[in-house]
Image 1 (cartoon, rainbow, N blue to C red):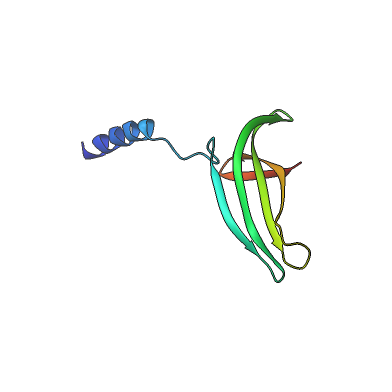
Image 2: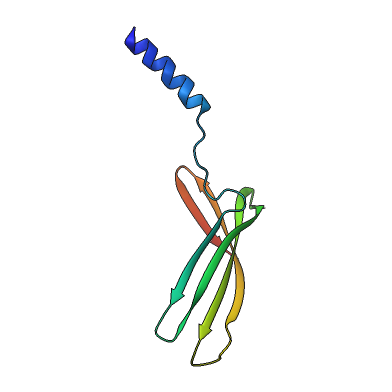
Length: 96
């Protein structure tokens, strides 16, 4: 009887729980960057969902703001896109 109750509980519990997905819409990450002659920060933001070669991928925009004291007194900012997808507990990463 205890085994049956446990099995029923697990089935009900597993049907109502939601696992966290990789890179939910609007997700953002921020981190600092530093090296011998430059420092700054990087911002990554999930900005879109696209289809690449038949696979649904999350587009993540990386924005770099880097201050290089040897070259300029103002920061240099540039962006690029990366694409990720999640399958079988593996995150795949593509660059444009």
